[in-house]
Length: 307
Image (cartoon, rainbow, N blue to C red; front, side, top):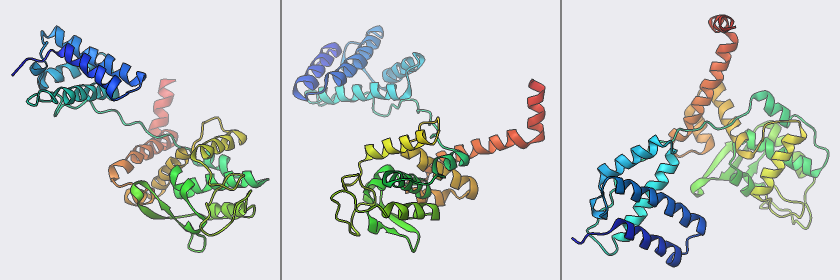
């Protein structure tokens, strides 16, 4: 077993990903910075040979990065850079083992999605449309909230995906999986109002036409939907920045608050794993905590005691 100088190995790896792989200067700078931290740490441990790194050393390094207040995502990036380095070195040293195997970064705290109160949803949606594009934007916002659609599902929907009689829409979600979602009466009414203005531009209207289009009659883009929803919120005096995913979160949290049926919410959102849906139980608890603070006598007494 021939020793592999760690510093030299890092230098050769950076040259490889910069010249051969063509990584961007930004990505290359990230690798250089992260691997420099590894080399410096190993130098402090009197480790210069890549073979001398093992899981114990890497775990000590992760602990130090954590003490330096690096985020979990940042630590994970450092581990990923080290993993890529060892994959490169193993091309010429087949018996060299990846020391990061089995080592994980601290789990990143799950951030709660931003949502809306019911009265905020009313502030956004309870308005009459004055023209074609107001009707379209209102219909998009209503459908996002009514059915909890992802942005990609809204953009990809066609006219024949909506069954107004059955009050359902069929959408194509993640992993090319289709699901059928109920659509509420306000959303159906808003879509019917929008359809009065069709066709748009050079559009040839048919059942397989996009449900939402631009003024040219082409399928509306995700970026356009994001901007139109943002402008809709501004128009109606909302200070919070609203984007399509906020309406999906509001749909899920309000449904869970009223039903308590996590499995049903999972099905309606199209989540493959219920663990993804469980984030909304935290939102539900926040709602209950607010109700408690407003209504429970003991909570009121505690507040008075503090003042």
